Structure formats: structure tokens, C-alpha cells
Image 1: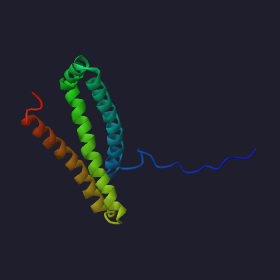
Image 2: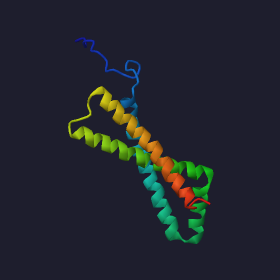
Image 3: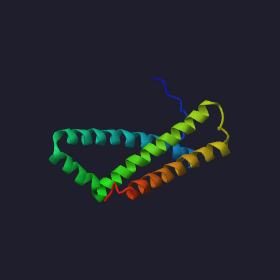
Image 4: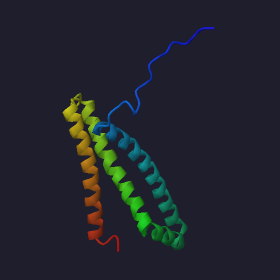
Length: 132
């Protein structure tokens, strides 16, 4: 019987100190899942639209509720964040932005753009009277 050697464990969250690039990486994955869920909502919206006025009215009532608005705001945030994070990755694909300062700045810019873009988007929707 052979004894297995003690190998070092892979670093985990108790070892690593949190930093913005780690959070940005996790948010990129979360926003991808949010976009997938948002696509399902769009499919349900289209199905209700095809099903007729009663089904669409029910969907519109749920979407226009405070809970529905939180969901739609979350989906729009996911779209803005995933866009910004994708651009961050495209910049890295050119071979620049890998220094600690640049990576942190790009991560903060992605987070800031997603929050700002979402806020402006919903402000413009409300100003246009889409949400009455």
C-alpha cells in the first residue's frame, strides 16, 4: 500500500485577499447568468404577446409591479455590466491593461459604467413615460 504524498491545496477565498479584479470576474459570471435569465423573460414576453391580450396584460401587470421592475432593472444592469466587462476583456486581448493599476482601473470602470448606464437608461425610460 502506497501512501499518497501531501500536496499543497489550491488557494481559496480564505487565502486570497479580495480585490476589485476578483469581484469584476465574479460579476462577469453573475451578469452572464442574469442575461440568460433575461432571455427567458423575453421569450415569456413574446409568448404572452402571441397568446393574446389577456396573457399579455397579465405579463405587463407583473412586469410593471415593483418586483417586476427590480427584475428588469437587474437584467438591464447585467447587460450593461457584461458589455463593459466584455470590452475590458477585448482590451486585454490586445495585450495591454495587465498591470495592477490598469487592471484595477478597468474593473472599476466596468462597474461604474454598469451602474451609470443602468441609471441613465431607466431615467430615460421614466422620462419618456414608458413607466406610468
